[in-house]
Length: 167
Figure (cartoon, rainbow, N blue to C red):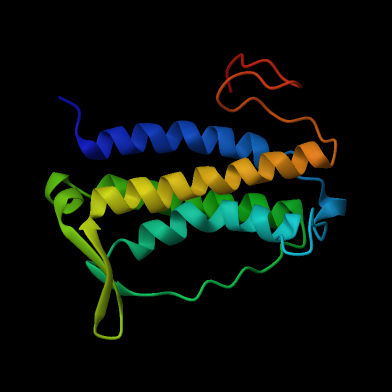
């Protein structure tokens, strides 16, 4: 029988493959571009997508964490984005691999001072915040690519620009 950890690792591995295809399409000369004044720049969003899994895997490693402040620096190159993603992917896989069934079911809390902001099993936090949150921002990144007229890679099936024929 496959464990929760193995499910998450399998999902993460496949999603990392898709994310890498998206990140490789980032046009280096457009890193400061924003689709709207309230939006993140392409470089901020791409770097956020690159580092998110590793940072959140580390964040969920302890049973309780304080509400974080999340700076969103802007990447200065595609190499910086891809290097950050390599590191993040490695950290996330290491953390996910280390968590056993009991670790996944253990309560995880985020606190602000003495107040508990959220409390849930680690598995739920990994699913909702580490993975779903990551996919959400990757989806934003795909929209940025479309708006910049960059060919959109296949992610969950073929795109208007690319057939899904493997990775």
